[in-house]
Length: 346
Image (cartoon, rainbow, N blue to C red):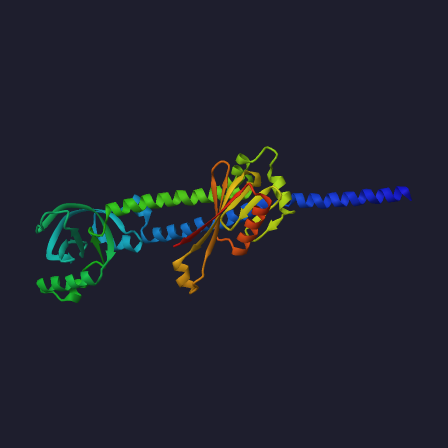
């Protein structure tokens, strides 16, 4: 009987130890870090959609490798293949006598060339030539291939009258596209390419960094800063164990015997309580949100926690009940921590 009782006690101790091990193995910090990292992956996804949309509007591959037009009649063929940006090299262009007017200023001059019985119009940038000549020889420029629009149609109508042609007859021998030098903006495309490159680097950085944090949560800044400011005896294993035995556990803030943890959708802070020197309770009244929610008493509560290394951690959007619970506990349990209150109106 004694042996059986002793055996039963041992089994009970093992079961309790097993339960404790299960609690210890609950890695809350990894869960918080992975959640934040997964949410942060939304950012590169949104940026990727924006970059794809930008590339659809302006093809960066076309900017880097424009098509070469030595025969204006090929403009329609390139346009049908979604090739818009071109390096144009044409032998002879003839002035129509008509100009493009933008904001009461001459923006360009309409020229034409006939190749393979097709008349193609070219809008030459007014900045490229001092004044329009009847004939331009060896014309070269960077330009955009565009589909004929209302402005071109009106010009063709007037030009056909000058030639004593009908408008329909002129349209039948005219290309459905024209070459527009005025639409090509070297600086704009350069800036867009630089912007696209920076955006691509940001997307790749976000993807790589957050993927690393998902696989290795201990590499996240919050964990690294915790190891940097804490004592050698403080470990993330201890933090996880104490979270299971927390004193205060709210939606965003957890206080254990030795640690202060803040976690939200975008941020996590892990601090040893004995390293905290000041806590600022901030109450902000935002006019924008007051008008938006039609609530005169709309307030936003934040905490600023300063540690011995003089680094201050900002904790956003905390409920008033959480602020009260945290500050009351800190004031009662840790009188050495200075509590301050700030009130802002924005």
